[in-house]
Image (cartoon, rainbow, N blue to C red; front, side):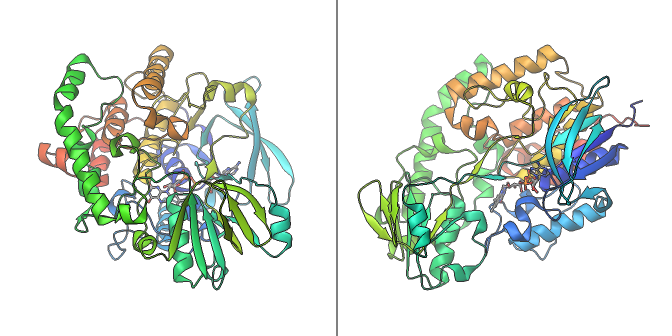
Length: 495
Ligand SMILES: Cc1cc2nc3c(=O)[nH]c(=O)nc-3n(C[C@H](O)[C@H](O)[C@H](O)COP(=O)(O)OP(=O)(O)OC[C@H]3O[C@@H](n4cnc5c(N)ncnc54)[C@H](O)[C@@H]3O)c2cc1C
């Protein structure tokens, strides 16, 4: 029997919802603290730019116990995702647990008892210290904007120019009739560049460091990418962490075939996306760049580049001048509106430095067992830090793992020593064998979804862990199947 805990979930996005649902369903007392106006995180309407839609197909961007509505498109729009998350939170009775416009400013280990004391700022600006037995950090990887500055920006703005982060590009009319320059090469950069063209911008320029591979929604114009890139057979082409000699040998033998597979995909993408004509052929082999930073190609983007409606410039800004942005290559581009699609800073700013040092290595790599918990930071775990191309499922399974960790109900690798060893194996692999896995502090599961999920459900003691062999090898992850696997884990009660 496990004793009921007082649990604080920080953040009410996809991950906070998963965590609150799971701890509540187990019988714990849950409080959700969220600094914005409601559920949704990055999908909250005021944080979404026009026409935003998921990169993941809807079957992969859902919780294990609720599909997205049947009438949603394959890649739902931002407001649809928001409505799904809100209704999901309502289904699970989470609304009354939510405290909005409330911010966690700091935390410290509770004196004289396990757990943490949180510094919580209420909507009226007053602060209170609250004790919790267990804390779930579900603050996401897209919260602190990364805003670079360049010389001359103040004069540029004073002369009437606008500089904004991509998360503030909320209305298409910001671009109409203007010279728009987008800084960055991520999915949000291409989304905004395309939106600016469609909104009637006078000119649109996208400035990016180097060309990257972008996955089309339909590979070859025909096959939904989930049927190729999200399957175990494809994932197994990437040597993962902690594999034995036999598996290494198998990878060495298969190398020529795997190499040919990737060259074939590259050739297909080069043709489909007119990469040569766009002067956007990546220099890095596709297999080396597959991780959470590989964007899905915004429909229409390459056509607009090929036809000159979007101009691509490789490089970055050197400085501003009224009405102009100067590039590192020496060129000056007319600009009224600059959109900085420069991403977000990763971090947990409210964690005390003593614990932050235990969490993050000097080279920025996170020390998290299964990307969820650190054995040197007790009574605490992370949900949604195992980011991927199917983040909702990742958050769902991480939350299920974490509640069992908190309750002492995992069945494998439960000792401090075993967790530390697993963390070291993963760190070494990221640093030496697969540097692409070190992006975002190493907090990216892609392309190893199946391997990660296998570990999580194995740790939870699931008796059923596979679909039929063909489905398991050649079909994408199936949220309903994971629901069945979870149902086969040992039960316990919390009182
Ligand atoms: C435009 C866009 C499209 C995306 N599309 C996909 C996709 O198709 N597939 C996919 O897998 N992923 C996608 N992602 C990634 C996306 O971030 C995740 O899928 C997921 O929404 C992350 O949820 P989260 O709950 O972990 O974090 P968030 O959604 O960032 O939520 C974290 C919450 O924590 C709150 N918070 C932060 N700090 C504090 C604090 N100190 N006190 C109180 N509250 C705090 C924030 O206000 C926020 O609401 C996309 C991201 C963006 C930006």
